[in-house]
Every structure is written in C-alpha cells, then in structure tokens.
Image 1 (cartoon, rainbow, N blue to C red):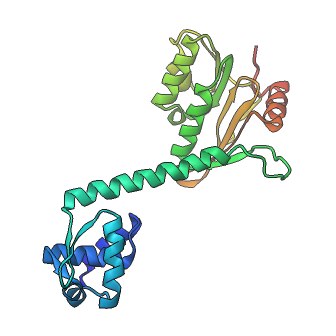
Image 2 (cartoon, rainbow, N blue to C red):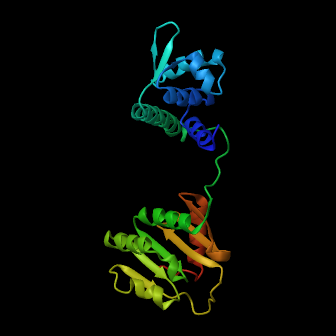
Image 3 (cartoon, rainbow, N blue to C red):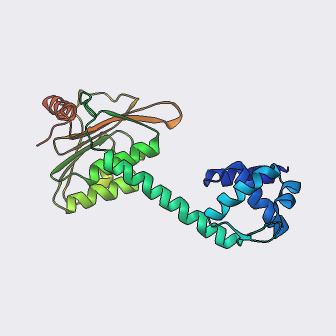
Length: 251
C-alpha cells in the first residue's frame, strides 16, 4: 500500500468512515465495479468482511448494489461521494454543537468558581482585547507602553466605541502611542504618573465598564500572556483596586 493511499484512508477516517470502509470504497473506484472477491483481491480487507462493509457503504449512500449472482458493487461518483460525506459531516457537526449549546449553561452541582482565564500568544491576546473592547457600553481604559500592541483593529475599535458614545481613556508614556489617538474624537490620552517606571515585561491593560479587565505580560521572543475576567467579582474588585491607586486615573 502506497503512502498516498495510507494518507487517503486516514483522511476518510477523519470524515467518519472506518478503515475497511475507506479501503473498499477506494478499491471499487479502482475497479469501477466488482464482486466481493474482486475487492478482496486488491484491498487489504478479508472477503468475509467485504459484504458487511459494502452494506454499510450502501447505507451511507456511497455505493450501489447489483442483485446478481454473485452480487456486484459499484461506487457512486467522486463528486457525489464528496457531497454525501460533506452533508453527513455538517449534520454531525450541527448535532454535536447543538448539544453543547443546550448543556453549556446547565448547573452541574459543583461550587461556582470565579471566571479568571489565561490567554497565551500575541494573536489570541489581540482577539480577546478586541472582544472586551467591542462589548464596552460606557467606558474603556486602554494602557500600554508598546506601540505594536496597539494594532490597527484595536485602534479602529477604540475609535468606533468612542463614536458610539463610550468614554475612552488611553494611558501611555510613549509619544507614538499618544499620537495614534491625538486626532480621534472622544478619546482622552494621558501619561501614567511621573513616579512610575516602565516594567519591561508589562504588556497592556484593558478595562471595560466596571466588570471586564485584561492584564498582560511579555515573555521572550515577543510572546505575550494575559489574564482576563468579565462579569466576575474578581474583575470588579481588581478594577476598583487599580483605580484606587494612581496606576490609572479615571475621571
């Protein structure tokens, strides 16, 4: 068996076929049509198993059966098989995720824990930052010492939320970060307190309304890790502690 055929069988298994089903289906396409003996001669499937496997493939809509003696099998076209497997895959996907949607909010009898999440990787932190910013309804605080952490989508989202009436405060010591928002209406830019020194590992801080917060730190080779929380007691208390200090002065 060639490496290409092994890869094809593995791919069919990912689509829900068994190894025998994949081998019989491929063998029938080589033959165009054939009996169980014909299939067993070229596929690594015992002849005694070909009958039940062919029946399963028929149930899946992947082959047709000729009631002759001996019985002959013919595969559906590649395009028809592709459409059939795609439809089956999509149905199974819908069924799986419908179940997840149905049970995700069901109580499990365990003690409720505060929702404190960890996100690793610059792209994933960007995505979580955008998600928090986009859901803000009244105010946002965004702080960073690095211009590369103010991506174009983040800059655009802050401007959009400001245009929607959300109060925006951007905190940064860097002139280039401040200049990004200098002409954005509705965005206030401030420097952190003069006595504060920049921590070389600090990444960004995001506060949205009074119940969502993200804090990140930088690692080696540009990596970034963040913790975030939304709608939790942890988020509310941490926001109050930060604002009670002079780290972020919110008017």
